[in-house]
Length: 316
Image (tube, rainbow, N blue to C red; front, side, top):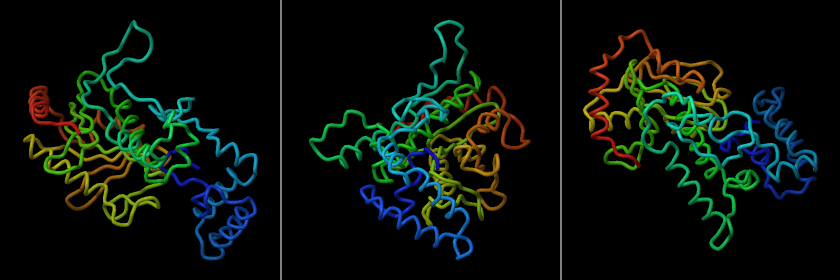
C-alpha cells in the first residue's frame, strides 16, 4: 500500500474501525476476500488491496507497529526514501549541500503547499479537541489515525512541496509562482511556471492511489464521481490569465510516479485538448522542452510575461 497520507488506511480498506478486536478484524478480512475475489464478481485490484491491508495489520505485532506509526519512510519534501516523516517543509530557492558552490536556482515566489498545511493544522487541532496537547501534528501514528479528509490536506501540501522542489532545479531561465489566488473565488492555482517553452498552469495532486485519463478527464478510485481536476484547473487558469492579460501555453496535472501507469497522458479532444497528466519525475523535462513541438518563447516575450505576472498575481 502507498505511504501517501491520502491513501486508504488498512482499516478503511477492510471496513472496520481502528479499535476493532482481532477476531472481528479477521472476520472482516475473510468476508472481503470472498466479496472481492475475481471469481465471485470482484476485481483483482480490490482483492489485492484487501490482502495488502491484512499484510499490514493482520498480525497483532504488525498491527501494533502500524498503529505506532512505524515504517513511514516517505520524506515530506521530495517524496524520496528517508526518515523525514511528515514534518519537513521546502525552500525551493535554497541550494542544497554546503555553503560553497551553490547552483543557481529558478526564481520562486509564494509558499508551495502553504494553504493546505494551514488547513491541515487547523482541522487536526479541531479533530483532536480543544485543550488537547498537539506536540507533533505530523507524528505518523497521529496522521494515520486522522480522518481521510485531514490526511488528504497533508498529502496535497506534500505534493505541492515536492513539485516545487522538482522544478526549482530548472535554472535561472525559469520563474515559478506558488499558491496563487484565483480572482473572485476562494480557489487557487498550485503553480505557474514560466520558461523558454512557455507558460504553464500546474496542479500537484496526490489522491492516494492510481489515476488515469478517461474521456478527457482524470478518474480513479479515490476521486469523487463529480470531481473534474482538469476542468477546475482550466477555470482557475482562465481567471488568472484574464486578470494578468496572459495566455497559458498548457495545463499540467502532476501526480506521484507510482500513481500513473504510463509516464504521461494527454487529452486528445475538446477545449482541454493538449492538457497533460504526468508523473512528477517527468515534469522538469516537459517544462524544459515543451509539451509539444511548438515554437519556444523569445527572451523578450518571457520578460514581458514575467513582468505582467509579477504585477498582477496575488497569493493565497
